[in-house]
Length: 308
Ligand code: TUI
Image (cartoon, rainbow, N blue to C red; front, side):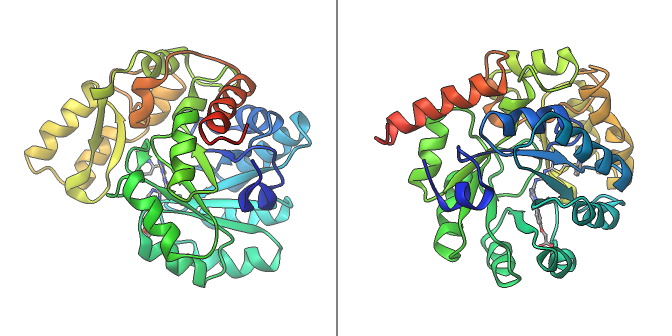
C-alpha cells in the first residue's frame, strides 16, 4: 500500500507508532521500524540529553528510519527540538501544542515536520507554516486529547488541506486502518496496541490492564479545566472525578496525577497511577511482537480494501 506517507517516510507500511510518554522508548521505536512501520521515540517530559541517548540506542538496534515526537508542553521542548536536528533525525511529529516556533529551524535542517492536530483550524495553520503532513487525532486516543472523534475529524481535515493526513485515535486492527483510508487518510498512527507488544518495555501490570479492559473502561480526566486526558478507569480517575466535581483547582488536581503516569507504566501501579490508553483498549486481547501485529493488521486491511 503505497501512499504519499509511505513515500515521505520511506517505509513499507502506512503505520506510524504513537510517541507515547514513558512507552515510546528505543526498543519499541526500533521494533516498529524494523517491522516495516515507522517507529517514534517519545520526547515526553524528558531532557534533551535523554532523548539524544534514546536516538543513539535505537540506531544500534535498527538501520531503518524512525522519528521523534516532541511533546510541546514539556519544559525541555526547546532542547529536544535542537537535539533532533543535531542527531540528524529526518522526521519529527509534535503533540499537545503548536510547533510554529520550531518550524524554520527544522525546515532549514531538512527535517520533515508532522504536527499532531485535533482541529481543522490547526491543520490549516500547520500547512501554511510548511508542515509536510498532519496527524489528525480523534478523542478516542489515549493521553492528552481534543474534542472531535476520529470519524468526524479525519474527513474534515482531509478536505481542508492538500498535504497528506494520518489518522489517529481508535485504530487497533486492519478494520480501523481500512476505515481510516475510507475517510481519506494515507496512513494511521497506532498507540495503545503497541503498548502490549513484546518489545514495549513497560510493566506487565500495564499490559495486562489494557488486555483486560472492556469497552466501557475508558475515562477522561481534566475536562473541566481544559486539559482532557484519556486513561483507563481506576481509583485515580474516581478520585479525580470526585475532586473535579467539588470544584478543586487545576493545580490541586495536578498534584494527584503528578508522576502518576510513570507509576503506572514503570512501577505497575494500575490502581493509583494514570493508565493512559485509547478507547480501543477494549478490543486488544493479546501480547504479540510488533512484526506480528503489523503483518496481521496489514493483511486484514489490504483484504478489506481490495488491494491484496
Ligand atoms: O499530545 C498528545 N497526547 C499526549 S501528550 C501526553 S503527556 C501529558 N500528560 C499529561 C498531561 C498533558 C500531557 C500524553 N498524551 N496527542 C497529540 C495531541 N495534540 N492531542 C491534542 C493535541 C493538541 C491540542 C491542542 C494540539 C494542539 C492544540 O492546540 C494548540 C494551539 O495552540 O492551538
